Image (cartoon, rainbow, N blue to C red):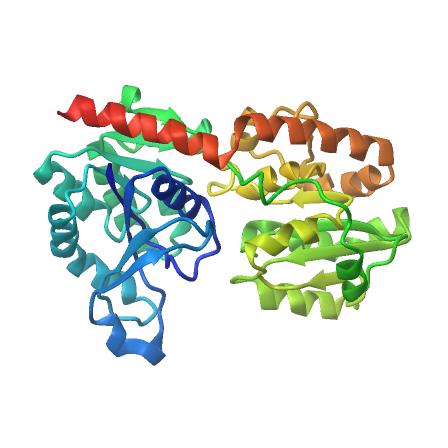
Length: 400
């Protein structure tokens, strides 16, 4: 098959997540994979943004993978990159579909190029599948743009061939956005068990980070959003310290809230207890997870987070680590408490429950073993890529 993946993230700069894995696995299984991305603002390279560029034989995850990346023209200024992309992309998408004889479109975007992608798919009579990872329009902060995004999302969702939702909770959302009930279904997220697997504690890394053998380590991996819940833990860190004497809180990630978190750590004089590293390459993250006694997902519950399943949870569990998470409906529906190596705690009592869990070594070990079995059986990217390719083939037959 000739598969076109269309997204609105910068393929080269975005932290590696689902589309990177699936695109490269498809290519390793004999399919021709083409990707269209949306470049991040870059005022130093404005001229480069005005032309389409093509990167061939490209990979970021698997060294034997080979995809073709099309970088469409846009004005690389914050706030204008997506707007110009929206205005210019249809003609180029159409050209790429025609010249590369695309068989199916796998769509990760709505606002920037979803409407144009749907129109091109209809023109060439090829199936287009939308990947629903979250409540898209709620991510937009500006009220007018939020309403426009919602409008575009409804158009896209009601006109695609199929909507595959990353959490069962998102099925109802997709239907609300216009998908026919028969066309909206759950398709799981995954992780790479060749990378995220149990490993012996990396003693050299622990030494470099100032973590001793006696320390209990709490770990968070991911982008630092306003809703990540890390401020709650740092503000109430004394509760944890009173319960367990030797504590380290390791935060692997960056993003919009990094400086705010860093400033709060300094203000609370927790520089030796809270360790911030910024983003790390994916292949290095398991070494950091190896240091953890418990991994956390302390998200505040809101319209954005309640229906999602953070991939970090599968990666924690794949490394054999217990997880404490706030009770996100999307996650709870898929991973029932304790049987899958995860315990849920309300946001208001999260710090207190985290302290109690750190004090129960046997419980931590039990949870870690259960979680590992669950994710290896049900969330391996390699297995999921085969299932998705089968769906692609089935949809192609129907469209013909």
